[in-house]
Length: 266
Image (cartoon, rainbow, N blue to C red; front, side):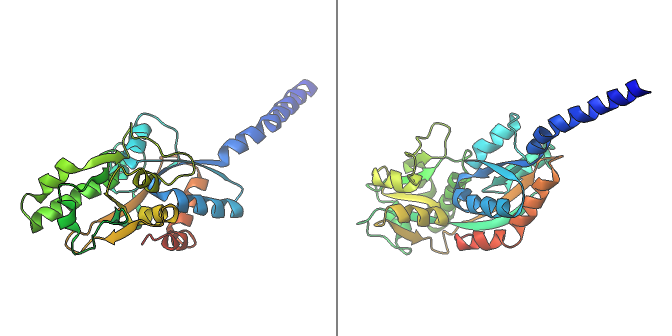
């Protein structure tokens, strides 16, 4: 009888000894998110961590490349994508059971100082032979896919313009081999400072961040005839912790939505 009690006591002591590690693992959320969300998700994660005993490990990158990593078995509890398609594809594969739209963005043009362009003249200027047009890499990065959607809309205005824009577009960001900006540099400000493009198509939120580092940049709103909206969505991994679901709720409601709006997301 005493021997049995001693064994039980030893088992309890062993459980106590390992429990901090177990709890520490349980108190970590692994989050994969689109690079365009970096600044705002860092703020949302910090705000959440101040209210909950949890650590949110963040990994950012082009949504298409992140999806590929998740399909290959990368460890993540929640994925925040810059489109609906990537979370929907993961849902179809059984990675998670629901796609949650949580924000919207718009495409803008970032132009070098000195380029004579506004919303009304944007398409005409983009088609000028000397203008170097930069976009992100389609498939790997939804920003590039949205740029292609804009090209398709241009075709409705001017026959032949879609192919002209595709032919001249430089894939400068968002690909598996795209060069990274130096640490501390906004990637769009950096590539424009390096004169890699005359006009670059990206999210309006990215454009605002780029101009914080390169004040002379012009931000051109797309005319209604070319406008493209980007919808962001989240998916939580099947059997993820309740902490992960709680963080998703924080993102979907205030103050998560308030912080998104403060950074220019709808």
